[in-house]
Image (cartoon, rainbow, N blue to C red; front, side):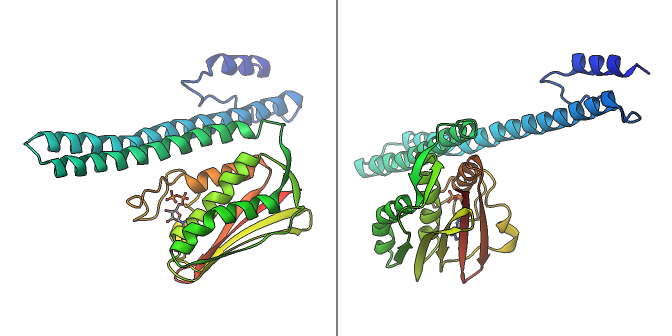
Length: 271
Ligand code: ADP
């Protein structure tokens, strides 16, 4: 057995980005050196977890990007395997375009996610009127809701100021509203902003399909989609992104939902 400081040194020398599993494991000392060793061990634990998540994310992202690319290759090779009419070529091009659109959405969302990762380290948040912003986003989504015969209401007083990243909040509100409209076939979508104690609360409420309990705690995971949403062109990144933006602001998004009745997403932001 090494003396405590030597043990810390040996462990530090063995740790690398390839192997973050080393721990000092000094359990029998509660003195200052023991506390230092415990603090370093728990730091290693967090770093190891972070690296694991990054690796998983890179692998999930590659997998997701491969699907539309494989589809493009298949469309091209099938189309070229025999003479085609002009109409058939046109169809094939439309299919390629829709796969390209899916790829573009995914890459856009990945870029925003990468940006959201740094957001929490940025201090240059600006003063944003959250109510005004929500009302503007509702106005931009209303035509899409109207096209589905849905009523989109917005109750958002002006003057709910917070220090925030306006681009991030726009993404967040757009995602929640877009999801609500996409998953509601009749009834209404209502958005509201209000002050609750020292929080600004933004709620998006719909009378849509609702979300079953076994999906509910996974919908914020990156790339998680409920069946059918993939074919509808979803990336599964929308809510992951919204949650990252919320956390970067020291806030969070919670959801409650009932199948066949509707869903309610609430974003709470410290003022
Ligand atoms: P995407 O919309 O790209 O599929 P999201 O991360 O935004 O990805 O949402 C994840 C899943 O959660 C979606 O597949 C969708 O089925 C479900 N979902 C999100 N919002 C709602 C809602 N308001 N009502 C019902 N289902 C929803």
